[in-house]
Length: 76
Image (cartoon, rainbow, N blue to C red; front, top):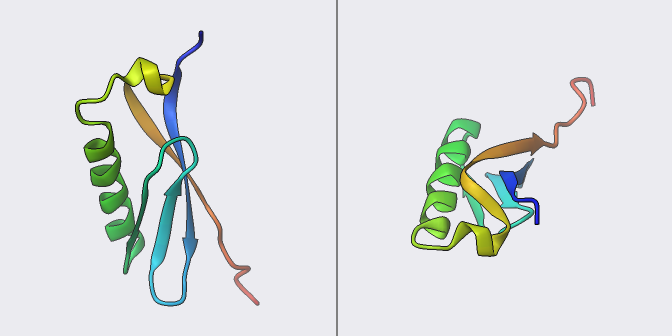
């Protein structure tokens, strides 16, 4: 079995906050700014994985977070 070295997450703009949702694990968080959202995502992922057997989740030790963002066109 091949273990993933990244946790994939997607960030999109909500009505008042940015929303970050992981694709591989059950983690969703938000923030008023992108920086706050990213910090909250890192913390939420760390808390979710704390004490877990990463191999059971299909993850390699010390996975990184890979973020994809949805952006609106600049001249919309």
